[in-house]
Length: 99
Image (tube, rainbow, N blue to C red; front, side):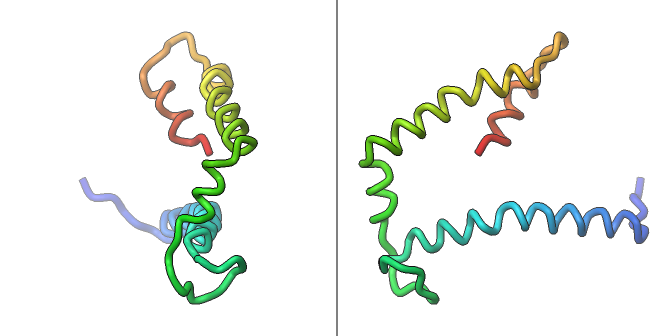
């Protein structure tokens, strides 16, 4: 069975791709610049360091905020997707879409 690709379907896929890129590209940019060893944004990056990640994971305030976010994520996501006809995809989907 072959799927017909008409103009509407191609426009739909293009729009979905643009939305996904709009949501994910800023995350990629932040990660790339977080690996930069300079204390300011420099392009092209001059090296690689984990300094910002070490500062994040050694900070008690950030770790408490991260733990609180991760701890509250599952009950809230489960409550928002509650279904009397439970299946495993209802458990996995909130974890996949969580930030």
